[in-house]
Image 1: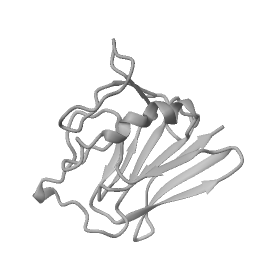
Image 2: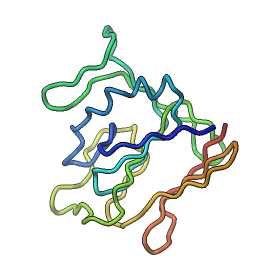
Image 3: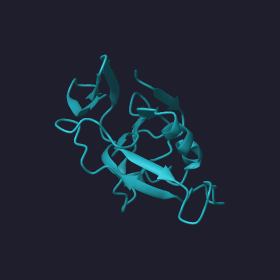
Length: 160
């Protein structure tokens, strides 16, 4: 029923040191074509969650390619109706960076704050250690990001 993909380096991240490391965007069409529901990554020492999105080659191109600086240009469509509470069937793939588990978190005074101008990122948190919890049901998936203190810092539901 559910399809999850995990890999180390995120395709979509807005943290300053890794935001241009976008090579994993090159496989987004495969993930979308095979109906993946959720992508879970690490690498960045923070928590990030995208809006549901679809990503493909830019207008006039037939495939995605990586630029010399590590970025991947493309056409992005966002599902702005999905709220994870009342509207729980996303039109697109949700990407989660769950890298706030134990290593040193990014400090704003060291320039590790998020880069600006990325409306695809719904949540970003780098000041609390946390982990991702999945409660998997037959037709629903409940996702929570839980801080080390037990506080739920983000949650949403997916339905099929």
